[in-house]
Amino acid sequence: MDAERRAGRARDFLIGGLVGASAAVATARRRRIARRRREQRLEQPAGLAAFEGAPCFEELIQEHAEDRSS
Image (cartoon, rainbow, N blue to C red):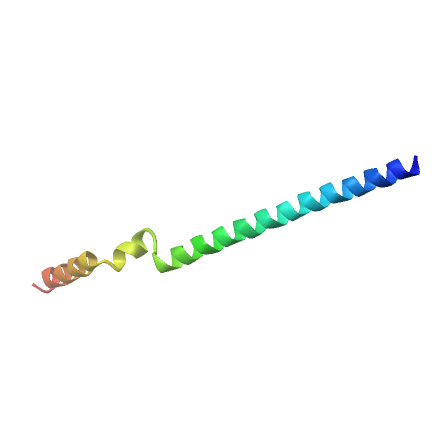
């Protein structure tokens, strides 16, 4: 009876270790993906910030300034 209980505890311990290890691996993967996305957002701005850095926007600003000065 005691040997069965000890084997059951060992099996539960191993299963718990596997579940915990897989959770740690999944968390590390999610953090790596999130970090990569954050870096991409910093390199390539989205929305209006992306448009403001475009050459066509600079031309539009120059044309608007010329129209106001005329």
